[in-house]
Length: 468
Image 1: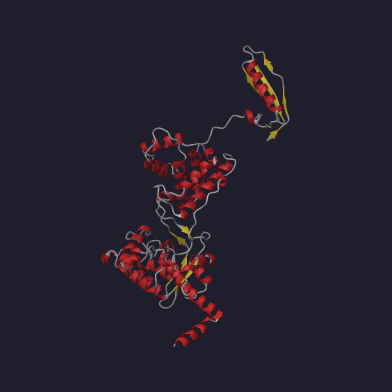
Image 2: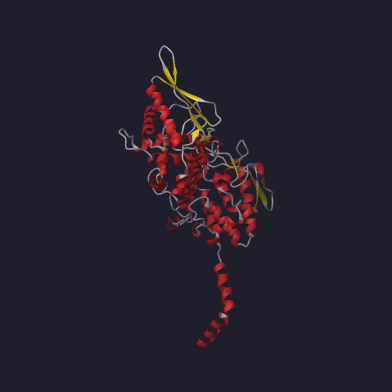
């Protein structure tokens, strides 16, 4: 609390064996304060500073009794120390993927805010120390870092620039520009740049909240975010024949004895015939499947199991165990599935059974199917099923493209967008904006209606009759 009501009293000498001198003063309604000095000259100097500040009209802090001009300057906080404090604050409540993104952004910005100091470690060692140790909240039982990492982090602590450096528009712009690159120096995807910018903005908002910065530096510069393409490229969408050939090719991957591909045919079929996300299909449990002998069945989706890495989950598991995307925890989504997918899932269960926890899909050891596993199988299947020209094209380049093919084919078949959105777990707005370019026939319909409006069909027929 501040006050302009200041009263400074005369210096008082204490008559001890070794004399001392007290300066006493009072700020507002707070109790009187005093400072003791060994000599009268030091006491006079301190008292004179108090009087000058009061005469200048400076506000005095009622707790310390000092004006701003006499308040000791706080030790400058470095970016590195602030970043570690921010990570420690966010870590316990952040999802594994968010922890990964937080770690990546803090590592990237830290490498940009280092002064030129002797003994700089090699770039790969620097990145490994920051990404693997500095910005990971580890349990006390975790291994201690190697000597090379310890020395690197000690150097970073000394070389890190002050957090206040970012108050300079040129410096914050330089940091923002660095977000356009990955840690290896390659160009980052537009969505990645947006995500890292959001992490940085939130971190600096926390610095303002703590009082370390007067305002968020990101708002000081006009920095243009790259545009993100949200529409699905229609070139990735397979037709029913191509989808059938790809699923057939999956069954040949790895040979019959290892069954590496056959274990995953039903997984990919869930993406194409049910419109599931890959992480949703991986988490699918047999008790949540209704698979009748004839007719349509249904799937109850509740969980997703994305591959994120042990470093980020905090549980020692590679896969996160989380709810559905864009839904509250434990909320479910019911997806009707056609008879063909019902038959595929029944055949899969009969041949491979289920994992101990009821999951339909498991690797040879019963564990969760890793994204790297089904990506490798899918890549081999594309080379088996597609022509060299198609393999080089974007056609079904990713397993996720099977979901794109499912949703766009449903919309093209005339299924109500609200129903498609419900099955897909999207909003209608997002659904239509993403798949606008994948809807076939709309241009022909529009052309025909415009022609009818202009009466051009009749005119064209007359012209053709004249020529004949």
